[in-house]
Image (cartoon, rainbow, N blue to C red; front, side, top):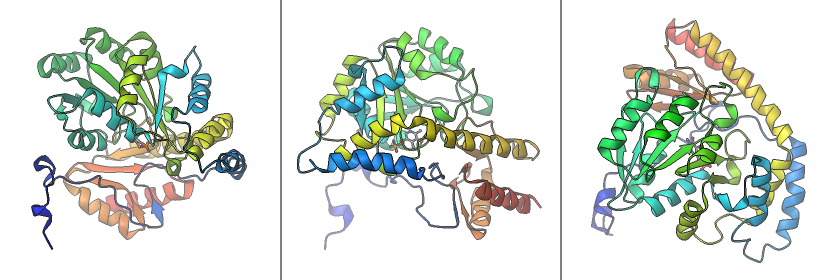
Length: 360
Ligand SMILES: *Cc1c(COP(=O)(O)O)cnc(C)c1O
């Protein structure tokens, strides 16, 4: 048999690591920011009813343009949003890939602000887009001055803002991002990845949809995977001006969103109130955990997402092992820290007990 090295893998992918969240199954799984609360049975039943209808025609390809879903999303988002400005895909990761395929690619570059979502550089790599980075200020903040200066200097084609940011949970201020957008050249496509925006309670934090309405070069990404607790459905969407959406459509695989995901997505928007209750519970749990962390030496940044960041630095691997020995798994970034998703009250109590034991 030939070895992997003999195969015509692209040179720039040799030695490259794939997405690395562990899939270990332990008692308390807090490693991939899923909504740890299962979807309420009534909602499951509702979604099932809609899905049943979709199944009757499953011998056919789904609506290639997922019109009903886009119309439902436009109505749900309000403010005169039009279906033309919405594009959906098999998870918002796939939209990130489409964005880089259409607006990045060989000879182009995308700028991000690490530490940030680990898939942004992985997708950049996969699409042959150069990944550029800019410094953050103290406490993971991004100042408009630094961001604008970096963009003028590095001249990326795309800039990614993840707010609330994965893995730190920190947000970019609305006014800061607005100042940035006013100063940055309008030929830079600014993507605001708002996967966690539904957990955001800070009224000064960036509101991507408002910025999209004000600036032509903004695209906003949302997902059903986190707050809505539908990670297994694989559904995410972008809000962008029509020609940006056109670009995504040019590179998208046909029939990328299944009939079942389209139907379940529409239904889940109708039962949003029930899903919102669970978000409120998670936000309360997050705030309780933050209150506890504020009494410790962790120096954890304030999180607006459904996870917290423990900057464990050189002790990250040892801390992860300590948590694992207690049946808890977070997402360790060796040398930097551990991101821990907010779970049930019991899961969070286990976490606090484990952290107390660690600090002695
Ligand atoms: C989870 C996540 C996504 C993608 O989620 P999908 O499941 O692909 O919709 C996108 N951006 C960030 C920052 C995330 O954390």
